[in-house]
Length: 308
Image (cartoon, rainbow, N blue to C red; front, side, top):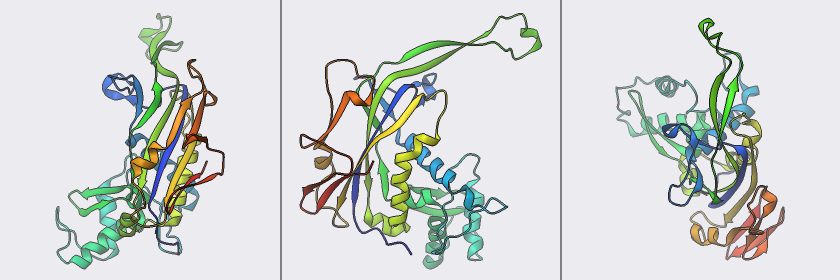
């Protein structure tokens, strides 16, 4: 059985996009998200979590049985994904009640606290994203609420970005009546280049409540490193994780404020020229370049590790 999480972690994620749209805004014609006042690009935490979920689902497809279910691992953990396309949440909740031969009462948890804990615990054990991010499961079949140990911020570009609009054409037509048309026109929006930075937090205290352990944390970090490799599309251009910098505390509650640690890790443009590649930047910790695999003693009982 995997070790329970005993250390608080804080991390900085760097990723970039070239000639693509990292996170379109559906309320703005799918334009790349921007801070209207500064021009910095934004990518929501929901978008990043979606990519983590997709990676976990992708890497565990081989574990499915013929009916599409994920068999339990030796310690009873499953790596199903709760928030996924066309998921019917009430049906997932029914499984937790059926496991303990309970009859759900509409919109209410079992009155017996032990039974309520069993229902919530079953959801945590089955679904990776509930263990990691938490969930509000108060639908008609109530499985309670869970606070997840992992929280992430919006990603914000290091420098302001420019949104480019491109006209595109399609030679084919949709209907026979449109045969006389030469082609169909469309629009595509891209960011020529942007380096984005997001912050994340892993609470060992909340991890203990959901059962999120060291193996889960390793999978989560691996997902952050590789999620863009399995999320290619014409709309997103070239996207890649460029750095994952993890502050590992020696205690459950932590040994230093997260913001103080993040402030010491800076991303600096090498020249005044417009950046068009990750090589145009340098990552510094306390003014020193961070090399692959290098570990910094940050403060008493805190270390910074370059994971990627």
